[in-house]
Image 1: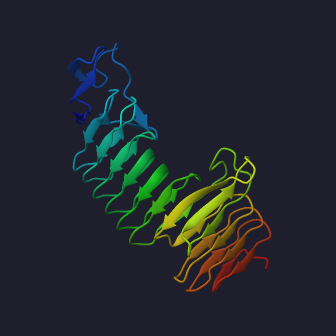
Image 2 (image 1 turned 180 degrees about the horizontal axis):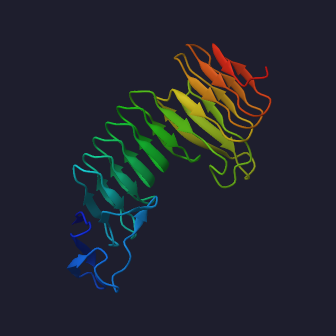
Image 3 (image 1 turned 90 degrees about the vertical axis):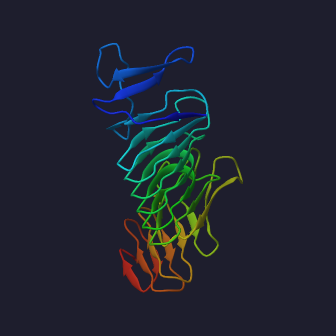
Length: 250
């Protein structure tokens, strides 16, 4: 397992040449022949994994922009401190550490301390802080941990979905119908206080604690159940049950 370090303007960019040899000393943007530095969510990478093997990518105590998962290996990204931005793939594992970290596409991610954000992560764990997961429906999971954590579903949240989302925080699950007959796509939830639904017709049920439930578009049914709940219907004719209600017709 290789360890990949940080790159930056004025620093050296270490990259693997053809055949696996390590070539160092090429500055970022130093020559026209150099390949462009990859980006993550529009930000230039400070740490890049160009190999096809299993790499251990270690960040710094500053803000890192990490691009992993470029090969077919199982990369592990250790963000350490700082508000890190990490892009990977389905084989990438991310451990964020302290700071408000943002992860795009990974097999699993543990944000650690801070207000972390997960986009398209299979198994996401927030830890301490107000964490948010933009959840792809499927066999994934989101554990918000301590703090006020939310999960967001959206149109196109899974290829083949034919319905809005059904969320039951008391049971710790979310599911949706799919094109393949009776198949249901399911995501496991824990430590979630706030849910934002899809533009379709959603059924969102809270738990015994105080929840914030937002339906979005569509004819939504929102029920906070126990606890001091806030329910927001949005567009469409919505049915709401909660102590504080906004945008609800019934």
